[in-house]
Length: 455
Ligand SMILES: *Cc1c(COP(=O)(O)O)cnc(C)c1O
Image (cartoon, rainbow, N blue to C red):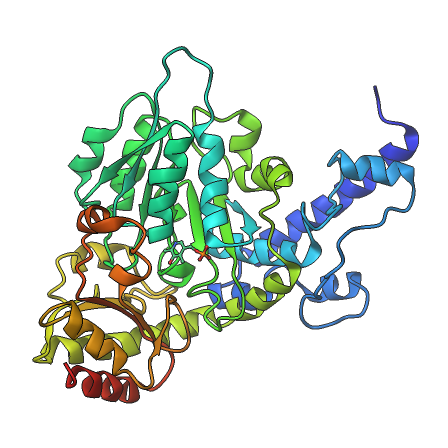
């Protein structure tokens, strides 16, 4: 059935909007990182196109979009024009956040990317991997994927339990920095490679270029969780990754007022298991098709919050990272501390590998972010005494905050996976994860010192 004349008219108007946005995107892609973070696609012209000329992106809490007539509705609901329909599918405030995030992840790349924002980081990971694990129907088919074992606790459970329930087997790589370990596990039934860099909490790293090369040899994608690094320090797409996932809840949303996630995929990603339409623009395809049927959408209020957080991303990461290095150096000298893991310390075995990938944007300065972990001397009880003695630093299962936050992973984030899982992931009961925020480092050091002296 061909479209009626009325529908055609809306499609023509829609093409104009698409062309205008494309032009705007090309224009803003010429700007530097900070400018993109501050403005994204919300230009002066856009401010007036939105009606009132507000200087920041408007918050659209509306559940749904009204159409002028049946023709526009038909064009909209068949996705023949740029539309948002209903806030489970899309929303104008979320549009601006998705544009900014994809611009930042594709910064400096010859190709472009798109983003899909979700209700949480876990929703982003689930949405990103699920279509890649779909059964093709071939008899005796064994679906597997290869992942670093040093991943966020929730990701570990998603892969080890939920994906197993659905018939997909995860093959764990205990030392994700060893390229050979990945090569040994990939075979013709592998759907994707997955790594987290730097990992939470051990800060494992991978040689992203080598992993992308391996994945592409098998025509499968490389997925990287780069929550801790953020695009201010590392942009995995530039190194060959196909998909980046974020928990926006963490470092990007450091103010701590919303849960959210994002899937950012390069246009024209590699995957011999996806249809061409899905590969061409994976994040948009996820948003408009599979996610529409399961509803993991972000709230527009959260998008509004994240938009305002992302504007100052680079400067915050630089400040947090400087503080973290000072705290790490203090801990490394402290007699009550067994061992400090911070990528920024030259003694860290992965310092060199991290320095190749984690570089402050628009500079050639390696910068290592604000996550560190350390083990307290003694046993689990000593670690708890130290932890309970903290006065300024918050005890919370959280990280990425502008406020310093500490946790004991064995009793919190990594509690679910049991002794064996923790051993595989390298989490002793005396390990403390500390994410240093924006306070003055001298005050954080003072709090750590008094608490350590209570063990
Ligand atoms: C917290 C976290 C997630 C999950 O994100 P939520 O927003 O809590 O669902 C995923 N990856 C990493 C590295 C995280 O720290």
